[in-house]
Length: 360
Image 1 (cartoon, rainbow, N blue to C red):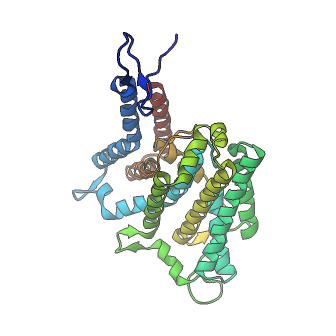
Image 2: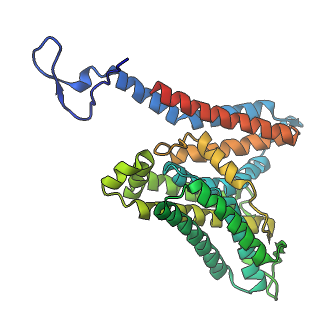
Image 3: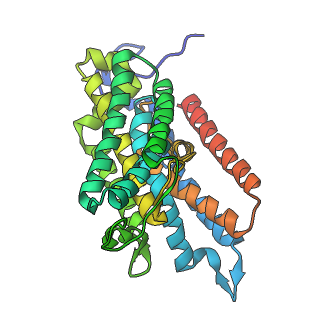
């Protein structure tokens, strides 16, 4: 069966009526496209609706103590945003990669490598906070850039490249640390980190955790980049149709290298925060974080096929996962059941994406 597509209202091309007469602009009768636009807008808000629903349900099923809803306590809400911060920052970088139509399985291992590097450079090498963090962030960005170059130049799927990168980063972390966790003690003597680094484990006025502030700041910056820059348009173009983007003059190689460098850099940022929050760096840190980051991106409505998605959706997806983990823990739900519920949520988000494509 042949399907007729309504003319594009943006083109402004006149269309002749079937019975002859004056030409009319296509936009006057393009109803199917209007319906598609409405559906797109509704699905664009799916993560926000889901976040609101999960929040309301969490309030409803939250345990109570002396009449107080434990979920809504200041301490508990602070714990949620603190727990979300690392995954959320990684998910921001993952969003850029997924918008390209790629995937990055190495970010959890880069977090572990960065946590080890942060602890080792400050405790064993005696570096100050700024030099140590600078070195670690450069390592993360370089690691990601090399993966992006391999993907773009060699034509190897990002899944394979970053799967190998995961193993390499874990191996480097174990070599660097001798296979052991590096504890961070604070002070001015040898084998001690600068006391100021402990601020990452603190909060503003005892309410807003410092990692959450960093997460929000990075998230807002990423939203601006995706909405306002030519770089973002190139990312969407490559994810939508890489061949067409290349023929249109988009610098595909440079964009891919930059995107994977961003993902590596933000994974390193999360690694520094991780070391500050746990007061240690272990080569096993960050295991499985890449899966949670991908889940946040998918729940946020970004298509794994590339070319479609938003950063605001990813931030909402990360918060949704954090709330879900928290309320399940507050109700003492078995850890295995928690995994099952989170898996069902991810499948539901993927099903919504398929439904979106079929409707539009």
